[in-house]
Length: 155
Image 1 (spheres, rainbow, N blue to C red):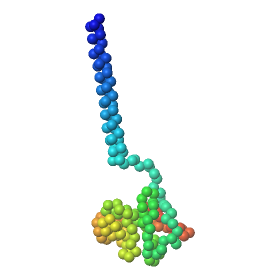
Image 2 (image 1 turned 30 degrees about the horizontal axis):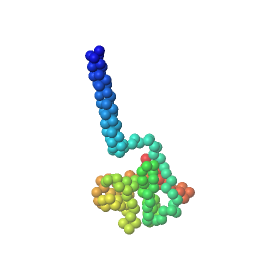
Image 3 (image 1 turned 180 degrees about the vertical axis):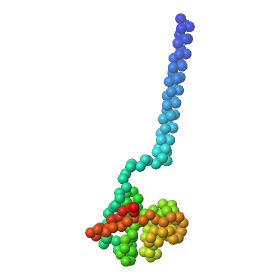
Image 4 (image 1 turned 45 degrees about the vertical axis):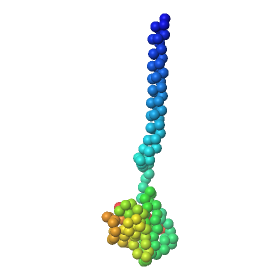
């Protein structure tokens, strides 16, 4: 009878040991997952939601934009710079610098488009004239109807 008790004891010990191994292993896995999951979510950008890019946007009223000035408007998710020249002509370009994707601005003292990040300069036709930008800015169409300014993509 004593032999049968000895045979049962190792089985119970093995069961307890395997239970503790599983418990410790799953706790370690949970700890690692709780550390790496937020890091992974931070490093991997979210998927684009398939948001439609508009073909045309209302940029405002023509009287809101004074001659020799510019303003940044939203064209979907991207910024666009709208410029009103001294003669009243309106022009629009992508407001993202072609060098390092900084936002450009209109400088009325220079009378051209300027990127503050690395001193990039574009003329009023969007062509890069000084600094590091490698390509011109993407042009947009500007239409005025009933005093409202509409900006649309060039085709």
